[in-house]
Length: 310
Image (cartoon, rainbow, N blue to C red; front, top):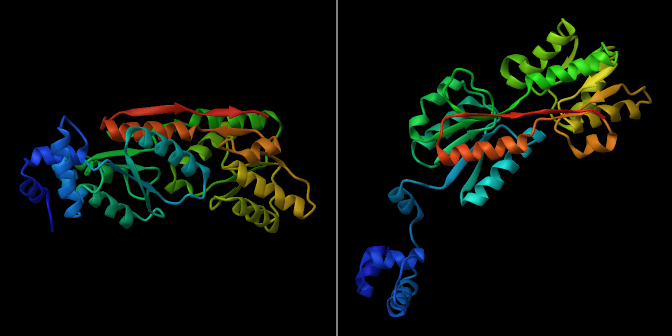
């Protein structure tokens, strides 16, 4: 197989001169450029990207670990990440995990083997402590507050806004709150923050809750479950505007009175339905996470979230 040294020998020019042709950099005479280019075409030579990356110590690839793309949290993050990556000349590799710790450990091993310059964990199934062990192999960024762990992070400040939201709901006179979450409290930072904020405002643990809701259809099915178990919330606190839309549709399809609702992520559906929502600005979180991946800095970047009343 032809390599750059063969091209240099056949053309009569140095390896560094051939490299300038391949990278279209530096000054070269037309004679030298044309001769080297002719040899490259005759030999059907293609540079080895892996070898190039190893030589320069950089792949310009960033792995994005995400459990799924069913919820706008992940799609908004990815949009922000990709916009920044494109502008900076980086490639983004999506790494699905389904919260499987074994799979996530495989991605960490790939970072150790220099498959990526950095990994961004949009969410995770492994402990933060595990991430610390791999920081010496490349940048690792999480999209949550890492607390006392010295891990680079970009994340939305949600606790204050969740508390503000539940206070708003309580002040409207609602007390039977149906809360829709994607995962149980013990395995999700978001669920933990949501429930802690509810308890701070209402002084009690919520009685009407579903912790397996991610999509429009899940919202619809959750209401069917509430109805079957004779749970009658007067307000639905959904983890997405589309989820709230699914919940609303269940009541309409079954000719039931639709309770008041609040969504999250400021989606088009929430605007159309004119329901209050919380915008966590995950697009901006994604942008900042990618900037950290590129810079290699270990610092925390909090982004304010926002309650939108309608």
